[in-house]
Length: 406
Image (cartoon, rainbow, N blue to C red):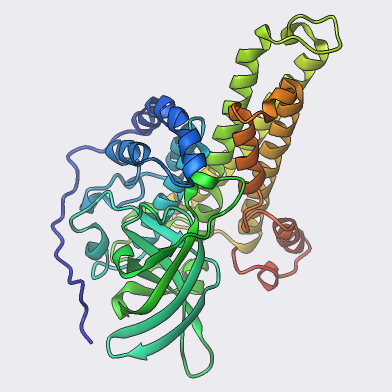
């Protein structure tokens, strides 16, 4: 069986690459549009076409695309900062942008034979990514595999061009997980994302029915996590970055951005809001309110500092060409879990400080509260697995016996 998607790349390295400040500014300039469209995205359970186009047109889906294919090939800290700014407008938009950049980072792990399939004529390709174990059957065929199955929680699948899927490839001993790149045109999307938070991410289920994937679009998954690289360009610093570090940090920006948005909203409304059953005509005069917003602001700052430590750690290791050891990777996972939990606790505090109208359907605070309540319980952060992983590492035990995401 031959590859039905031949490589026809034309290298289009950009004449100039925007700076980190430029890209963060672009994200900030989209905040009002995203904020306006967020209620519709929440109601319709998908991002608006206007929001998706604005993010793509600003080049914010090509942060992790190789420069030789027209991308910006930035670093992890830049993506974190961009996603945080987007999160101040719409958490779902920020989350999906984070996923697309994670997907493009994974494309960058592939050799030159593969990259043109995705980026050859579209450096802004939107690449979704699902790393959850699939319900799939895989058959070895000449030149690749044929797969049938379903993959859940496919954030961004409604607007993606490609998707990276973990696929169990048969061997003589047992199935070995591989990361497979598949065009969305080969798949169908099942409308299963019926949830209370992060509704706009459209994290539905994708399904394959006897889909062929050529061998050159598959890479062994566990070696990638452990630091093995398959790219033909070791000079590309970005793609030396820890895979687990990237997967930990990008989604954090959505949580931080929404927490910052909640704080700004509560502070903005405080002068005109009285406190029921009190003599305070304005919340800003209340000492209790002052303490609550001070605590919430510090919690959000603390969360952001932990996320920045993750980003700076993995960027530094990439520049030095050093693979992070297991204890360091375990700490990154703990930092990520602490970041999202702290954002969630800060928003809970702000909901109380603002008052019961925070839960009114017209209030953006209730949407933010639902988003962060759900997003912070993502499988990479929840179930106290990160704490167990970090604790095992500190005690000299192998945390990989607890979690494959390390």
